[in-house]
Image (cartoon, rainbow, N blue to C red):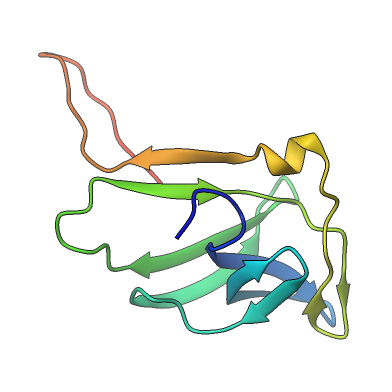
Length: 117
């Protein structure tokens, strides 16, 4: 898998017929957005609208043993048509919306923190 959108396995939330839904997608190209099962275990997938109006995805996932990092991408899509995601713009902001989520945390003595995703 790559570090950008193509090759990613996505958790996506959107409104379909007035209801917020969460689905999983395999992104094999910029022109193909295919709903499908992910290569890692996931359960309790749901989406809700937060008080600020933003959609939030909740789920549990099984991270492979020994994994130290996950690549992440985030996007704001253009629209949904008949329950299908439509392609978003390929501008600099969307193409650059990626990062690395470190799963191994090192803390300095006396410093407290948490990781949420």
